[in-house]
Length: 96
Image (cartoon, rainbow, N blue to C red; front, side, top):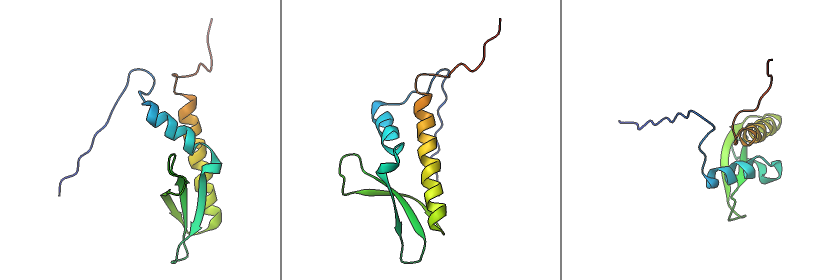
Protein backbone atom coordinates (compact mmCIF):
# COMPACT_ATOMS: atom_id res chain seq x y z
CA UNK A 1 0.00 0.00 0.00
CA UNK A 2 1.29 3.45 -0.92
CA UNK A 3 0.58 6.57 1.09
CA UNK A 4 0.94 10.10 -0.24
CA UNK A 5 2.41 12.51 2.28
CA UNK A 6 2.87 16.20 1.62
CA UNK A 7 4.28 18.96 3.79
CA UNK A 8 4.52 22.70 3.35
CA UNK A 9 6.80 25.24 4.92
CA UNK A 10 6.76 29.00 4.82
CA UNK A 11 9.25 31.72 5.57
CA UNK A 12 6.52 34.10 6.69
CA UNK A 13 2.90 33.86 7.86
CA UNK A 14 0.84 30.82 6.81
CA UNK A 15 -0.29 31.00 3.21
CA UNK A 16 -3.96 30.15 3.73
CA UNK A 17 -6.56 30.55 0.99
CA UNK A 18 -9.67 32.61 1.61
CA UNK A 19 -11.70 29.39 1.61
CA UNK A 20 -9.50 27.99 4.39
CA UNK A 21 -9.71 31.21 6.38
CA UNK A 22 -13.51 31.16 6.09
CA UNK A 23 -13.57 27.56 7.38
CA UNK A 24 -11.33 28.52 10.33
CA UNK A 25 -13.66 31.42 11.17
CA UNK A 26 -16.65 29.09 10.98
CA UNK A 27 -15.24 26.37 13.25
CA UNK A 28 -13.82 28.94 15.68
CA UNK A 29 -17.40 29.69 16.78
CA UNK A 30 -18.88 27.22 19.25
CA UNK A 31 -22.41 27.82 17.93
CA UNK A 32 -21.42 25.90 14.77
CA UNK A 33 -20.76 22.68 16.74
CA UNK A 34 -22.91 19.94 18.22
CA UNK A 35 -22.55 16.66 20.09
CA UNK A 36 -24.52 13.55 19.16
CA UNK A 37 -24.67 10.23 20.96
CA UNK A 38 -23.91 7.20 18.83
CA UNK A 39 -25.59 3.78 19.17
CA UNK A 40 -22.43 2.39 20.79
CA UNK A 41 -22.69 4.97 23.60
CA UNK A 42 -19.86 7.21 22.42
CA UNK A 43 -20.34 10.93 21.80
CA UNK A 44 -19.41 12.42 18.45
CA UNK A 45 -18.52 16.06 17.90
CA UNK A 46 -19.64 17.60 14.61
CA UNK A 47 -19.45 21.00 12.98
CA UNK A 48 -22.06 22.41 10.67
CA UNK A 49 -21.35 22.78 6.96
CA UNK A 50 -20.85 26.42 5.95
CA UNK A 51 -23.18 26.29 2.95
CA UNK A 52 -25.64 23.47 3.67
CA UNK A 53 -26.90 24.05 7.21
CA UNK A 54 -28.50 20.57 7.27
CA UNK A 55 -25.12 18.85 6.79
CA UNK A 56 -22.80 18.09 9.69
CA UNK A 57 -19.18 16.90 9.51
CA UNK A 58 -17.98 14.49 12.18
CA UNK A 59 -14.72 15.40 13.86
CA UNK A 60 -14.01 13.35 17.00
CA UNK A 61 -15.51 10.63 19.17
CA UNK A 62 -15.27 10.58 22.94
CA UNK A 63 -16.44 8.24 25.69
CA UNK A 64 -18.06 10.95 27.79
CA UNK A 65 -20.17 14.02 27.14
CA UNK A 66 -17.66 16.10 29.11
CA UNK A 67 -14.83 14.77 26.96
CA UNK A 68 -16.73 15.66 23.79
CA UNK A 69 -17.39 19.19 25.00
CA UNK A 70 -13.73 19.58 25.95
CA UNK A 71 -12.78 18.45 22.44
CA UNK A 72 -15.02 21.15 20.96
CA UNK A 73 -13.58 23.80 23.29
CA UNK A 74 -10.06 22.76 22.29
CA UNK A 75 -10.94 22.88 18.58
CA UNK A 76 -12.52 26.32 18.92
CA UNK A 77 -9.41 27.60 20.74
CA UNK A 78 -7.11 26.00 18.13
CA UNK A 79 -8.82 27.67 15.18
CA UNK A 80 -9.14 31.00 16.98
CA UNK A 81 -5.37 30.90 17.52
CA UNK A 82 -4.78 30.12 13.82
CA UNK A 83 -6.88 33.17 12.91
CA UNK A 84 -4.91 35.32 15.34
CA UNK A 85 -1.68 34.57 13.48
CA UNK A 86 -3.05 34.91 9.93
CA UNK A 87 -1.31 38.25 9.47
CA UNK A 88 1.99 37.00 10.81
CA UNK A 89 3.57 36.59 14.20
CA UNK A 90 2.72 38.99 17.00
CA UNK A 91 5.42 40.87 18.85
CA UNK A 92 5.55 39.84 22.48
CA UNK A 93 8.72 41.66 23.54
CA UNK A 94 11.17 44.17 22.10
CA UNK A 95 14.58 45.22 23.33
CA UNK A 96 16.36 48.57 23.26
